[in-house]
Image 1 (cartoon, rainbow, N blue to C red):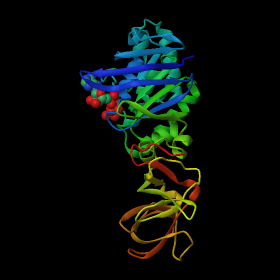
Image 2 (cartoon, rainbow, N blue to C red):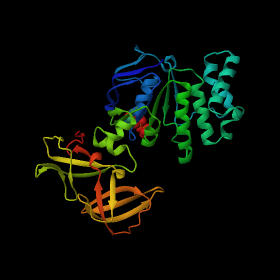
Image 3 (tube, helix red, strand yellow):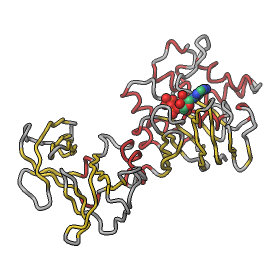
Image 4 (cartoon, protein in one colour):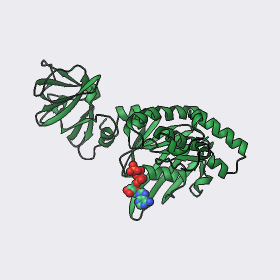
Length: 357
Ligand code: ATP
């Protein structure tokens, strides 16, 4: 059982605030991912949970008990680092069993637990090898083995896949997700990769400049981003943004810019008419013939993605990306009519990017 609660956590290095008044509860057995751009404070947050870093302010609780003053080895957590940190001269078996040996666990128990961890990760046949005799993916599995051999309440993973090539990352992503199910423990995962966050997590906390922007399920984050930063960070290719204003045109709530005129939901309220309209590429349709409500544009470039084609369309001065099904046969500079799905529009204030729901 390990519910991890962060209450008013702030961390400053010198005069610089790396994590700013963070409040977050990670449920027992949840897979929570901290995601955000480089330097936003994700690793620092994880290191404070682990006990490798001490918070400047605030408290951390495991299952309601304060742990802020406990050293790392007295907390019920186990951490996997980006660098793997394997001992080069030890075998896989010794690497995985090392923490247990330090804890003076009896030899027979260590052997049994190492074997069990190796079985979970499907690396039984590698136990007598040294790290240099392993591939990147195998080393990553050994690093995971070192963490899971200890029965901790929470496993903390700091960018564990960032040293792997793209193909292996996709494979290991699924394996870590499956591992979470198998070991049934709390997982707190740090990454700057929004795809990892989306595919693996029960909940995602999106961070920027030491502050959580939104913490919600992947679906919620994708469908109802709290602000423009979250909307732009999550999703690939990213959401399109067009700056304009809200106006009532013939009694109809309308978004207007030099490129787009688009009816929006009548309930959208704002004191400042300056807004930004957001629309994801997959929520745009393109047609070769005029359609009521569609905007006239010209194909700027098209990029085949396999099942879909990413088409960039120029409308007045704006470049808008649409993701449409293959085949898309229009050439450069062809006329095209662009339709935005009215149920999939996002509006943000132009001032600070807060979502207008
Ligand atoms: P990355 O994805 O690049 O690892 P991150 O989101 O994990 O980034 P942190 O490593 O938590 O970010 O760093 C947050 C901020 O705190 C950064 O500005 C970083 O330079 C600063 N920082 C982190 N550790 C220290 C330290 N030991 N001393 C001084 N500044 C630090």
